[in-house]
View 1 (spheres, rainbow, N blue to C red):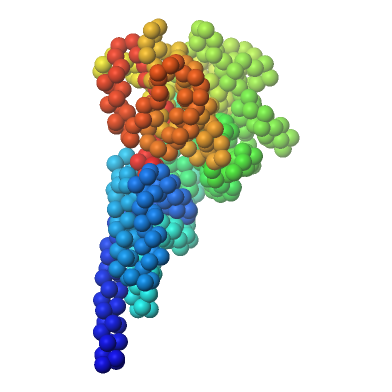
View 2 (cartoon, rainbow, N blue to C red; view 1 turned 90 degrees about the vertical axis):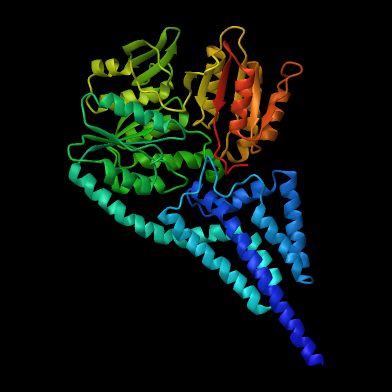
Length: 526
């Protein structure tokens, strides 16, 4: 009798184990879609899913309650296996607000994502099977379900060497293409201003040379190799490459097979400070672009870039010192005057009264590159009058209801945000209402809260109504706006999404008003 009871208990436990295992597999399949999407949007960086999981589960009361429920289920599952269904349910349906496929940042089943998903699924199924066959199904399967973000990150680590080897083939082809076509290479990096400067350089050169510029966001190893292989054809005179980095050594590796003839650093700021930890590391990483370049273009308004200019000159390189303000010591300076932008080359005016919606420092960099590559100053001046607008970077347009829209949704740095506020104050007609719609700035590390507080306070100082989108920086923005002592009775408007904020603006603004959309976060952010 006792033996038969033991068999019955074992069979019952096995049934529960398989049931829990099945529930956890279903839960992890749903949860995995969420965190695979985050990993894809964050460029497969190996800690991205875990970092965002901590943000999402800690942002809203319901998500926090879900964490408590899941952990309680995990603890109690060893005694009551059926309780393990609670963590599975939490993983399947949470965190609330993070969609399975996404809207502004949808999941895309690329070859790389399919590979990552296969590795992740293998690890997840292995965890479930270990739980079932060891008799600890409830605890192990529940723990595996809760660990989905960490397992996605581990899968990124596992697949990274494979992805590097696969990319090597495309890099080898790109190197051969560059050696065959032999274009002059202009490489541009900086904490911000890279894309704008790239567009300006291509425009100023295109009147006298065949120019190919890397497409938007193609600024890493795989992207630049793809740009060369698909766009660099025979007869190309200049290839303009935007180079980004998340850490030391990345730009050096790019320059090892795409050696710059002209290297440009547009600016240094706290962008990606979350990863670099301090700005000197950002300077060092960006400076890798100068090592093998024959000519360097640096915005010497920043003392750190001025020091790099001196170092490059001592190393025998040609150096163009440029400035975004009036400067007698700069080779090229572009300064704002009441009549418009004024461009000086070694103290001599090249153009005056330019009406450009452009950051002066970026224009100065582009002018220096054009002159270095032999474009006559007269042609540079002529082409400056119609510099191309850069989409979503303080781009003005009129809304159907008659108010002004300043679209700065691709900007996420403190200096650019201040410039955008100044433009909002200048462009709003007398008596018009001002509105700032923003989720705040991200990837600023320990400075993120303070920088967002300052930005909200500066919005209050120009009497703008602040509309805060999503939760990522809500606390800091609200604190800064209210702390600045804004006019009585005005409090920030809180919106769950940019779409809701756009509807609010359309309902409240009319002719003579203006709205600034400052930065826009994809929907994998809380």
